[in-house]
Amino acid sequence: MARRRQSWLTRMQQSAAQTERAQMALQRNQLALQRSQQRALRQAELQQERNERTRRRLEAEMRAQEAADKSAELDERVTDLQTLLATSLHRNPIVDFATLKPPPVMPVWTPGQFGGAAPRPVLESFLPAKPHGMGKLLPGASAKYEAACTAARATYEQALQAWQEEEDARQARISVGWEAHERAEKAAQAQAQQQASEVDEFEKAYRAGDAAAVSHYAALVLERSPLPASFPSLRRIAYSPPSRQLVVEVELPTVDVVPSEREFRYVRSRDSIDALPRPEREQRSLYLGVIAQTTLRTLSELFRADATGLVDTAVINGYVSTVNPATGQNVRPCLITLRATRDLVGQLDLARVDPVACLKQLNAGVSASPAELSPVRPVLEFNMVDPRFIEETDILSTLDERPNLMEVSPSEFETLITNLFEKMGLETKLTRPSRDGGVDCVAYDSRPIVGGKVVIQAKRYKNTVGVSAVRDLWGTTMNEGASKGILITTSGYGKASFEFASNKPLELLDGSNLLALLADHAGINAKIEAPDDWVDPIPSISD
Image 1 (spheres, rainbow, N blue to C red):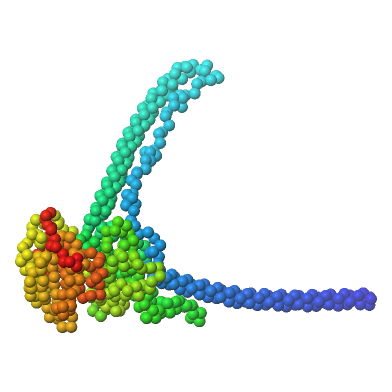
Image 2 (cartoon, rainbow, N blue to C red):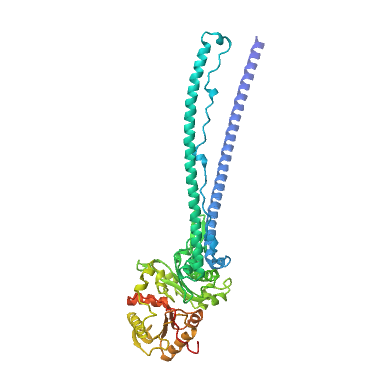
């Protein structure tokens, strides 16, 4: 009995020990699990922190790259402005008249638009199946089959008729569509032929030196010049055949064409992209370069495109249309003006020049402060070139209604010139007539500082006035102690005359200038048509 009790106690103790060991093992496992969970949580937190740092680093790199890209775009824009002249020298500005004749745009024939033909009805698909087997032995089977066949044939005939009517209607639509297509083809060919004919007439007039055609050709040259998209495209062009002079009025961009930002930088502490401003001096310098390059580029392209040699002299006036910040009014000051001859421009190596220095060499009038809209006086106003090119008026219908300056008497011509300059605000005094039938007039400009004595000489010529007349005017101006000399003619001048007058207080006005001045200041709508038997006065020995 005692042995059984001892054994029972032993088993109880062993069971309790096992239970305690199990509980301890469970506790250890729970602690291990907790520690594992804590380690996993900490690792997750560390990984999250690493991911956040990586995210912030990647975002900072992306923002820094964004700032670098914006800076690169700025540099590209500035480079485009700095290479306006250089890039134009690599392209051929000559307009090929053949490119003005586009091939006809032929319409495309698409018969599918009328739909396809529907399947033609087939009689067999309408006929009933023939009786077979025991069906053939049924009473009246043959008669029923024949009746069904007769009805099927009637239905087939109706379907065939409907199909034929629909197909006939479809073919009719195709026929009408084809006729319309042929008419469209003929119209496209006729239009192309008409355009080609107009181009041929344009080319013929251009090569003949027609003023309007030469002006239009010059406009095409400049329109095809690939300037930056931010540049205005407005231009006015006029050509004076007697002087072989082309006058171009170019619309320039404002100073805003130069980016006001110099660089973009990413500031990580603020997570922002900041713009570094471009120094005002640098912006003004770049803008002056834009104006200078645009002028030289225009001058170069016009002369290089003139393969027929119709233009001896070109005048470029550059204007900018903007708002005066001081007054809030719309203004259009002339910022640059230049007259240059073909020979003079041909001597320049434009790929190597400094544009601003080159303009000084060409005696261009350049604004002292283009960014401040300081204007200069054009060497030749556009509306003095030829009034016919300014407004679209019916010139031919009024020719006979205007006085012909080549038919008035010498005394009437003298009075006309004298009255003209009186209308322009000058005090005039007639002197003896010149032996070429024109007048010599001494005028006085009463304005302080800019005024003074003005010597005016006029010549009624049919042919180009020689450079000797300009030399004579210069001598007269010097002898008279005048502040300015004006030579006005019914014809025009050659490039030698403009070259001699360059840098001197001399102004050369041709026939178109005279007509414009008479219309603007004297209200006289005149014309210049020399009779066939007209003979210019004998020039002086110096001619």
